[in-house]
Structures are given as C-alpha cells and as structure tokens.
Image (tube, rainbow, N blue to C red; front, side, top):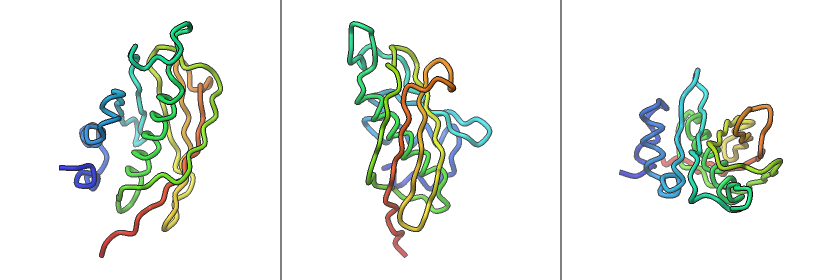
Length: 147
C-alpha cells in the first residue's frame, strides 16, 4: 500500500502516522505528527545523525528544510477536500537562527488553494513558537484527479 492509497482517509493521529510511514525520508528523519484541535503539529525528534555543525551542535540546514517541506506537503494533503499527491514547484526557506540539537516543531498554514496551485507557509521552532528558527513558503502543483 502506497501513500496515494492511504491519503483518502481523513487525518487523525493514526492516519497521520500511517501517512508518514509511507515516505522513506520522513521515516529516516523520524518525523512525527500530532493533531491538536484540528491543527497538525509536526515534530522532528532530536537525533545526533542529523547534526550538520558538530561544534554548536546544530542540525544540518538541509534537514531543517526537508522537515519543513515534508510538513507543508502533509499539511496540504490533510486540508484538501479531495486529497491527491501534490508536487513541489517552489520552496523558499529563510533561516533565522541555528536549529540546535533538540526536538524541532513545525506548524503550517494553507495560505491559498486553487484548482491547480496551492501555497503553504511553514514556521519551525524549538523552544518557543515566538522564536522561530526558520520560516518557509511552499508552492505545490495539485494534479487533476482522474474521473
């Protein structure tokens, strides 16, 4: 069973976990998701294999970006009326401060969803949401559903 087969289940704690297990890189990073009042909180657990700068230590910037891109895609799938697998068009990331070796969180907002294009904004933080370590904007192509 692939991700395309399971995205039609409405998002719940169990289905979010199932969705994440269908993406090998999300599994490698250890990404988790929790549902809080119909909002999804994505979690990247602390893991030494994700260090990019051992002198701080800080997470690799590519790991932070990949985590945020995965969060944006899953958030979009969860918010679609008729879920399909979106394809990334553009991902713009602003690093604001180093992501230290600790749990990292991300929340997303579906800014706009049209017939073919969707825009999702992502905020990533570690200790407090008011002190983000990165913000991003993602544009996705929404494939036409086969009739």
